[in-house]
Figure 1 (cartoon, one colour):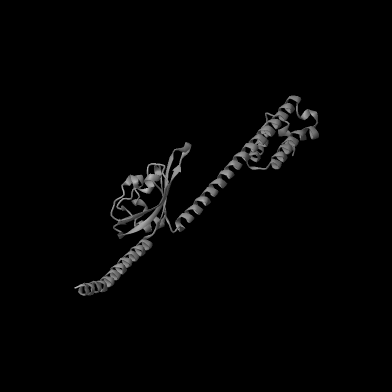
Figure 2 (cartoon, one colour):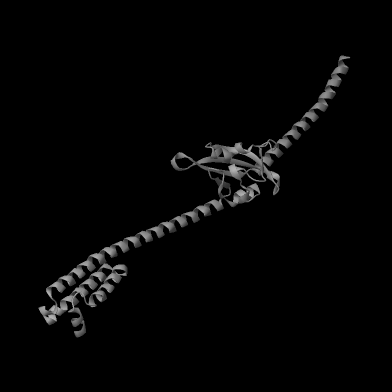
Length: 266
């Protein structure tokens, strides 16, 4: 205690001041406001202690003013630094929360997209692939990498619903959506090496808006309607067979009746 009093009595120029300032600045960075206030109060009391125990001769008036000035500076700098550190930490925590929320939102979106039974393809303004779910690859019989520029599918032959008339790349639903057009329930026939028998799909597509209303690409959603189309074809075939049979069965007795009528006329 005596050593501290002697050292502090050396005035603001003594080595006592830096020793006092170090914990104050450390608490400014890592401590709470109450801890910082307690440290500043304790430091100030150590400068006042020589006056209490040694009297006015312990500290000249000039040194006392300098000591008080150091305490004032420590208080202003300490609380200011602590406020800045707290603001930075709050912003960092908020940024971390936003990043976590964004990640969770992306995970939910990916879960929804991947659990869809319909195929989904999202392309950018230049036709570059952005999103492609598993259902799309399953229906088209190809993977995400097969989606090329301008919405075209590499190795995928696309026809109108008749299965014969090719659809030009610029007339395909996703390419039209990228150009700003909305397409609803367009039936198409697709075929590639993985789906040699082909598949019918019903496609809807819509444009995506970017900044300031510019084109942000397009999104296409499609479902496999092959079973329905094949059922329709089978129904048409059975209908044709039925009409052919009925026509044949009716034609035979009618021929006989006509023959009898001709005999009666003779």
